[in-house]
Structure formats: structure tokens, C-alpha cells
Amino acid sequence: MKKKLQIISWIIGLVMLCSLISCGEPTTFEIVNDAIIKTQQLDSMQATTELNMDMKMNLFGIKVPMEIPIKMDIKASGLQSENPVMNMGMSFEIIGQEIAMDAYLEDEYLYMDALGERVKVKAADMGSMYDARAQIEGTLQQIPEELLTDIVAHEKSDGSKAVELTVPAEQLQTLYGELLGAVQGTAAEGSPVSDLVISDAEVEVIIDAEGYVSLYALTFEFEMTVGEGDEAVDCEVEVEMKVTYKNPGQPVTVTPPEGYQDYPEVDADEVGI
Image (tube, rainbow, N blue to C red):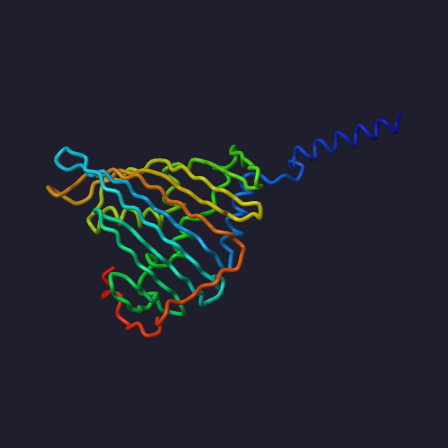
């Protein structure tokens, strides 16, 4: 009898322990943020960033649509060193005109090939617009635990896990402030902005079987007034941002463009791109 009571007591203790620590199963918060940290720590990567802005401008009572798709293909290595090397191929379209640009980062210089010109410029003078690593880090943000408490990570047949959640509008600025600033700046084209209203955002994260982020997607909408007085225009903007990693964790070879060392150096304010 005493032996049976000991077994029952042991089973109850085991059940209680499992209820406290979920039998060692990681929470969705741990799954997502461990993957984000692991991906941020990659020394090399190959990724594609796609940003699509679907705008509607209210001109004289008529909503005029304009779509701005931007795509950037990135290959980088040495990301954890002081001197990473990086290839970036960027294309975007505005008012029916497609513009393509290639850029190569090495040491302190950005070597650019666009609009029929090849130049080199101090990378530090170009800001984050041409810093693919900064743009991805601005999107690949760790997610607060309270937003993932009731979220389930759905495992797929290939071993990957998918997580979908909503980020309240009031937390968007905190998590994705740099992205919001870039998007609003692109839409406003340097004009003053007022009456800004941002929606909640839908976020999707897919973690591959090795524990790396393979997809990080973000969608949201905002409204704003661009310009002042009689020139003020009301705008509605839908934003879709997606970062897709190719074979994260695998080595990446970055090849510089032919003849890049002969590109003439110019000041950043001379780069009309």
C-alpha cells in the first residue's frame, strides 16, 4: 500500500511539474524570438525584401490610385565583423517608370550602378536608405511577450512553424518606427504631414526546421494629409512588407562588380538616386 501511495504521489508531482513548465515545450514567444535572435546573429545571408505601397490620393474629390512596388535582393557576408561586404539589387516602379539599381558595399564605400552612371560614395553619408542590413533589422523586430501569449505556432509538414498575430497601432511606432518613417517619407515626398492615423498591423513569421526565420511579413494601413493649405492632399496607403530568407545558416559568397575599384568618387548630395 505504501509503495502504491509513493507511485501515486510521484505521478501527481510529475503532472504538476509539467503544468508549470509545459513539460519543457517552448512557448510561442520563445519560438519566435529565439528564431529572430538566431537570424539576427547570422554572419552571412541571402534575402529578398519586398515593399508594396498602394496609395490613393484624394484630388478634387476623386481618389487617384498609385502603386509603388520596391524590391531588393541582398547577399551579404561578414555581417558580424566591422567590415561586411554586401551586394544589393534594387528595383522600384513609380508612375509607370521602372528604375533599377545595383550597389556593392565594401569597407567604407558604397559602389553604385544606376541610371547609366557608376560612382562610389561614402556609405556613412548615404544613411539607412541604401543599408540593406539596417532596413532588414528595422523590420525583423523581436515581438513583446504579451502579443504572443494566446498565439499558437502551427507546425507544418516540413518542420517549419507559422505564427500570425496582430500588433496594435499604438505599438507600431515602438516596434517598427524606422520602417514607418521610411514609408511615410516616401509617400509624402518631403512635404509636411498631418492628421496621421495608423491601423493595427498583421504580422506573419515563419520559422524553418533549423530555427531560423525564413519569412517575416508585415501589413498595415495609414491615412494622412500631405502638404498645407490649398495644396493639402488626403492620402490612404496600404503597406505590405515581406522579408524572405534563402537557406539561412548557409555560407554566402558575395562577388563585387567588375571594375568597381575604378568608379569615380562623388559626394552623397551628388547622387541623384
